[in-house]
Structures are given as structure tokens and as C-alpha cells.
Amino acid sequence: MLKFHKKTLSIVLVSMLAAGTIGTVAAIAGGDINSDGKVDASDARAIVEYFTGKSANANNADANGDGKVNVADVCTVKNNVLNGGSPAVQPGSIPDYGTAMRSNATMVSDFRTGNAGDFFASDGWTNGKPFDCWWYKQNAQIKGDHLELTVDKKWTDDKNPDWNPQYSGGEFRTNEFYSYGYYETSMQAIKNDGVVSSFFTYTGPSDDNPWDEIDIEILGKDTTKVQLNYYTNGKGNHEKMIDLGFDASEGYHTYGFDWQPDKITWYVDGKKVYEATDNIPSTPGKIMM
Image (tube, rainbow, N blue to C red):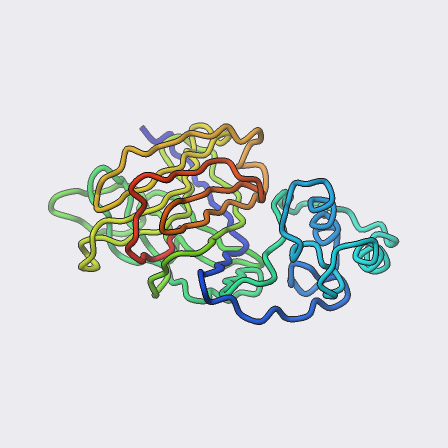
């Protein structure tokens, strides 16, 4: 049962590194590792994560774009930001505990720029039972430097003869279908009974395809855990609950999965948390939130 009060899921970016389609990596200017247009403590954190073993991706720590990670990268960031004493979290902002965006991503939807990329908002329909909400683009808005997906009371007279949900919700999905590769998002989850904050691939009968799906889901009733799952031709029952070691509703974290023909590997903040190898889905799907 939904204990209702209005809540939002905040997402700042989605990046995709598709198999076999890695583009040329642009040079990093003056320490801007995550390509957000500024050099700040988040760039410094990316270097710390690499040197402490939290992240194994050297591209996420190469601050001066010379193809190496060493003391020169530390100095590049230090000279641009740390001497000025910039705090990791500005007053009133949402803290970001995630990893830096991959600089060699094939496609990026960076909501901090106000650009939705290949994503669009679902509008004016419902999934049917047991989902107790309608999807409206008003509930999926890019505001300031992030995307907000909002759960609220239904504010329209829309009715469905088989099922009449009482709430409104927000959903973002891609226009295109995507296959094997690494996908990640930076998001802050909703804490509220009866809701799910999710990042997943999906295709099914509505696309004239088998039901294939890969899931990252944080249940609002317990935002200290993440539920991982996948479906192949409609066959699921692969749920795995992972203890995060933090509350996902208290800040941004990076959630990702690497989808390959023989396995799916899930990551949280750059750390591998689970791997599945049985009956892996193969049908390209849309990326959804």
C-alpha cells in the first residue's frame, strides 16, 4: 500500500558505452575529468577513487589527458580547485557520492545541460495492473541541473476500463534500441513505501519482440538495498538483493551494468556487486527510468 506523499527521483546523467562502437576520446581540458564544464572536487574524487582501488578505469582519473595516471593529474586538479578550498558539496545541494562519468562513453545524456539526448517522457498511458499510476510528461521534467521523476496524486480525468490508477508517475525512455555494452546512471532514489526507483532495459510484445529486460531497482520501502534482475523471453526469477552499505535516497550514486552475450555484471559506484551467467537476454531494448 502506498503511504502517499509527493516524492521525486533525481537523475543527473546517463552514459552508454556500447560494444564495438567506442568513439575517439576527446582531450580533457585542465582537469575537467567528468566533462561537466568545470573543475571541482568531483574531479579530485575521481583520482582518489583510482589510486585507492575503488575504480579500475584509468580514463576516469586522467585529468590532463596524457593517457597516464600519475602525480601530474593530481597537480592538474589541485592547481585548478583544491587550493581554492572548494567544498565537495555546496550548501543546499544534493551530495554526489558516485564515480565520474566515463570519458570514452559512446553516448551521453547529461541532464545537467538541459539536454535529454535520446530520451523522451512517457505521456498519457498506464502499464495496467498492478501498477497504480499513469505516466505523464509533467511528472518527468528536466529542472535546473537534473531530471526529476515525480510520483504524485493523479491530476487528470483519464480512465481505463480495466484498471484505473489513482496516482501519476514519471518515466523516461529512449527512442532507440540498444544492445550489448556498459550502461550507467547517476541518481538519487525515492524513499517511500510502494514506489520503485529504477534504471533498466526493456523490450517486449509491444515492440514485436520477446520480453527481454535487465533491471536495477531500488525499492522505496528500503533504500539501503538494490534489487537486480533480468528476463529472457519472459522468464525471470533471477532476483538478487544487494546491501548497498548506504542510503540511496541521501545523495547521488552511480549504478551500472555491463551486458555481454555470456554474462551481465552489475556495478555500484564503480564496484562490481553481482554477476549472472545463466540464460542471458539477447534482444536489444530501450533504456528506461
